[in-house]
Image 1 (cartoon, helix red, strand yellow):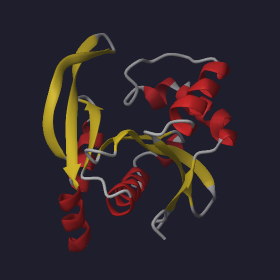
Image 2 (tube, helix red, strand yellow; image 1 turned 90 degrees about the vertical axis):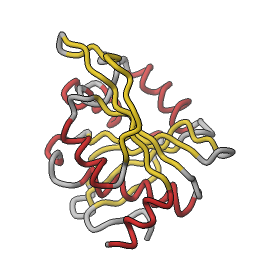
Image 3 (cartoon, one colour; image 1 turned 180 degrees about the vertical axis):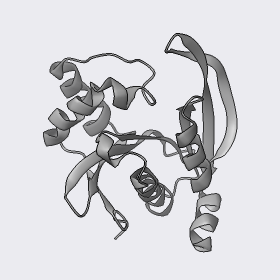
Length: 182
């Protein structure tokens, strides 16, 4: 199945996931490396965001990553800013359950999302943005096949310092070659 790997399966995000997403969204440790604006959100703000930006949008698709063995929801992967005419989108990944950090679940989830984007949606290019201090994520993205495309210099102020936002991308043909090599 396209939405399953060895340990992870993806399922469409539902309104019932809002409370769980709210927990992850308000965990500053979870959001430190992925969210440009660290903040604490009231439940109503999260409900509105889920309703309009994730569930109600024609240009985004969000999927909950689930550990197959325990059926535990562990994070979210999303395609955002989907441009069907130019066959481009941006991807986002957040592992909300810290017990699953550093164990390869992110790679599995992101590869499933890329398979969906390239094989099913027939997109040409997927991009992402990553904070320059998130070296572990940058290594992962390179391993998956993303290429460095540039950076926004000192675009993020975090922990009392300015950091670059690194832009990376992968093309459909590059993903197909990587998958064939496996």
